[in-house]
Image 1: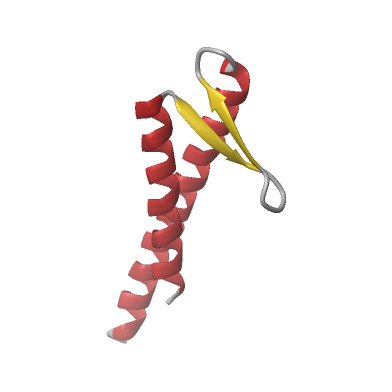
Image 2 (image 1 turned 45 degrees about the horizontal axis):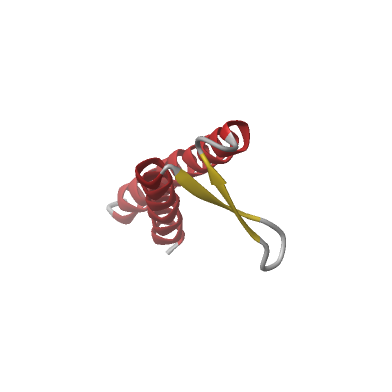
Length: 78
């Protein structure tokens, strides 16, 4: 169950990274309902910081999801 959750979160973040790279603008989510859009040309530092933080979240949540799934499968046979 947790593995599926982390894999879904990883897929969501990878989708946001892909859309941010292909559209050259990325949505930065703030607290509450605040959404900011950073463009690569006009705000490069905020764009790349947001892009890299989304990429880190995508990679780590996918790794956690895979490790949890492998752990679940290895314990299932025992």
